[in-house]
Image 1 (spheres, rainbow, N blue to C red):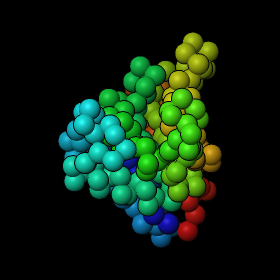
Image 2 (cartoon, helix red, strand yellow; image 1 turned 180 degrees about the horizontal axis):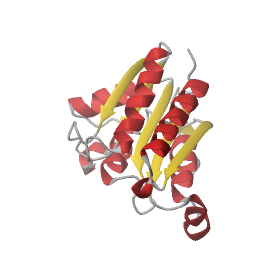
Image 3 (cartoon, rainbow, N blue to C red; image 1 turned 45 degrees about the vertical axis):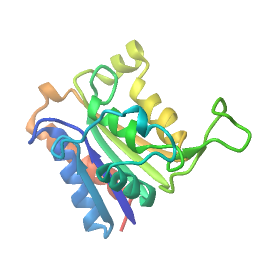
Length: 197
């Protein structure tokens, strides 16, 4: 299978990077073809300009490549920290620029944009791995777990991916090496379960 893996964390050597490395290694070991992008390392430009909004807009080569890979992906893995209940801005910009009309979703004939889009992504499954410094119970009770809504409903659900799995590892700031090793074992198990060889 073709799997697209997107990492958004600014610090090389972060636990997010360890999650990404573990996920990619498991996918490769299982025989999948992986398109991996570290958005910060690549200096991905997150700014969507007006000229790029239209469905038939002329896109620069980097965005075209991301769009092509996403369109061909049979599975998607996203790794990022929870910042203010949102993905980092660079990843939000990736969503804005790459998850495009005509590629990821479309409005049906007769719908001028006010209805429910029809999802176009061919990926059968998506996984999001998050890190957080907030306990899960507080995240849910105090904030309503906004990342779950964003990824499951607003992005992947809208684009036709119903098989969605998200896992958060917390609290990273006070975690021990043993906890992190166990979390990476869990990442490997989740990837193997969702994208077996």
